Image 1 (cartoon, rainbow, N blue to C red):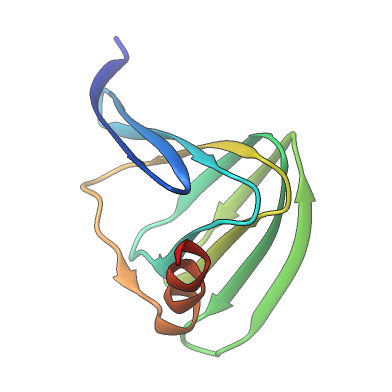
Image 2: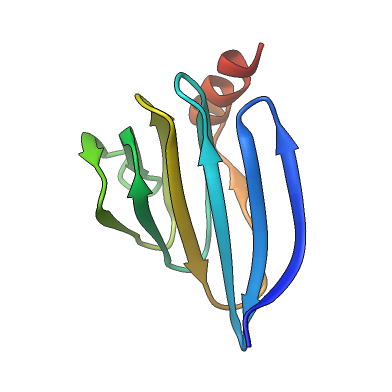
Length: 120
């Protein structure tokens, strides 16, 4: 059964934190002009873009190779381990993020600064 754990809201929108067996599933809202992410994980994650349009930034932290794409819903974004990622909403956007294991993230300063700047 899908279990609701908690929610969190700020100026960017709301996140619903859900759990299904060993999987965590977050339903994430990004209001137009705001950003989410700015970090990387040591595990793969998947983002299911349900509605909206984003500018997606991904940097391999080992090679420093960056990719930037504009992605429209519906779409699936597979984020490999150790890839910093940043999602900037070009329209109001909703996505679902799924991953196994316990959640942990390491901030990627260049992307995290973008998230913070857009919040101020």
